[in-house]
Image (tube, rainbow, N blue to C red; front, side):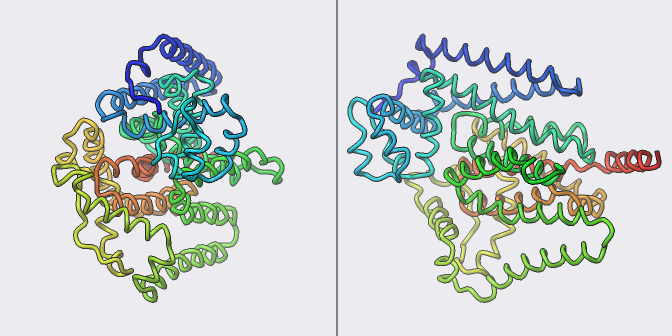
Length: 465
């Protein structure tokens, strides 16, 4: 097994040269791509976006190398990917068997050996984590085993994913022009947790690309074959999420239904009754399913019917009770109180879970270096949430209901906030799981009345011409 050594990762000649090479490639490609953007204001914004992601991804890597014991999970993924890469060149048949079959103890000790090294057992035997190691093995090959060269590539991919969302949202003309880039491109905690070499980056990037390509499918006119490339990338990133963090895919199901149904409703311009009927059927169906679960399922039925909820209960109880492993009440964890694992019992903690998933850690709970960005952001989000409800709330609600991306955002924020707040218990886990929801929460909070009215006036003038 590869021994943890920060010097070999950071300062060996090969790693330094590879890092400089790929940083040069990333920066050159950034300047090349940004120079072709039609809006010159976006040129500097795109470049700042890439530099911002590079900075925080390198901070993430250095933090784990020097301040987390044995490099934490990022080095565990890195070590495991190294064993896979060596297996490729040592014995292709064994490599292919590892890549195409589920992990077992027999394969772990039968296919890997002293020459290839061994992946970490806890990484290999969890299919989702080992899938991330497989992805990293590809990046290790093309970057000559340089951790920070891989970091530069991950940051560049994350920057492009966030830019995709920024392009489609900035064109809508309904958001505050100052807040929009902050939420989508420049949130510090999101850049820190979701730009470096980690599972969180893979998941975050995949979520953004799914939304982007689904939106392109919904908005691009023409037959199915004209959208084939969009469908391909949509399927590609769906598969990646399914293999890395499948509960996120399940959590996206209802928000994606809301997004798709809103698109259908918006295309029906002349039949107000039909639009109302479709909207009512969707909302009643979702509400009815929820009420049915609450009214008729016992705790045992509910847990047995949902492996995701059963796993969530196990994770929640493990984090809550195992203080010898995860730490005690020294500022690292929070509590939702006593939880009854019944439909009604879980319903009672939904508000507290959602609040925790969105706003915690509060500033006074985030005094450690790894959480300080989250504490400062919580102040920002609380203030904007209050403003959201007290300033033209009905207008904002109407805008959300009429926009595909905002309907997805509203559903996604609530579902992920509940899941993160309910299961995490530890602040360090919470801030990583909930990071993908923050840009979408920002979209909702940055709806701007003046921008929306300017858009209506512009559309009216164009229609009159």
